Image (cartoon, rainbow, N blue to C red; front, side):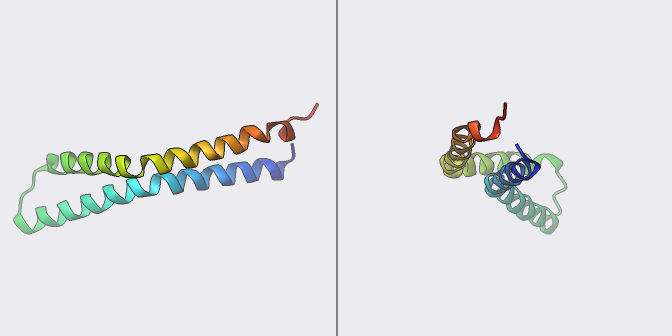
Amino acid sequence: MTIDAVTDIVRESLFLIIKTSLPVLLVSLIVGLIISIFQTVTSIQEQTLTFVPKIICVFLALAVCGQWMMNAMVEFMTQLWSSFSVYVHR
């Protein structure tokens, strides 16, 4: 196995991590921003106010995007394991 092959696998896996975590992170970011704006406008300075809406929205995002995320990860692992004999040298 060459360094180029290892670099390609690492690059593909990092891209997959970014691609699959992006929807959940964006939902969390947007909900946190909206709640922060709401807290600023209403002068409510409760620190725990953001947790429950974020948890609910992240759960909903996982429910909506979870199947796509799992399919992408399973597809990557299937591709990786199916070409395992190429990576092993004796």
